[in-house]
Image 1 (cartoon, helix red, strand yellow):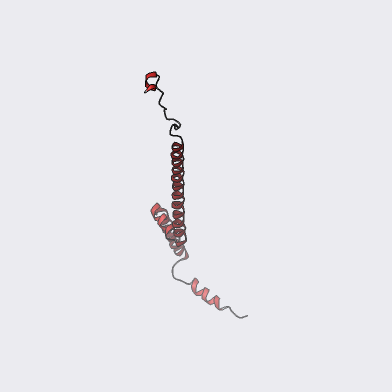
Image 2 (cartoon, rainbow, N blue to C red):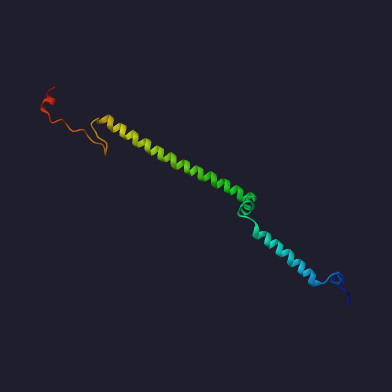
Amino acid sequence: MSQDPLDSLLDRWNRVPGSPSRLEAEVWGRIAVEVSDDQTTGTWDRIEAVFRRPSFACAFVIACILAGLFVAEVRLAHMHAERSAQIARSYLHLIDPLLVEPGAVRPLASTNPAAHKS
């Protein structure tokens, strides 16, 4: 039977100086340091890490632009509606100057008969 060339490499690796428990302790120590570093990062560091990704940054910029356009459109629609109402009121007042707008107080006609003769 021929021997596998990897067997000799594995045998050399098993003869590494230092005990396996020391290697295991070192590995777990490194893992503990990484986990503690992840837990101590602040909120701003996490947000910054998310915004470093180009795909998220582009999506965020596009969402902000779309939100701005939506708000501008709503505001513009409100302004057009107010302007249309103002034009309608002006037209009605032009047709009938005695027309009183809702909520306005119409002046009472004078009850003095002498006032009507002049």
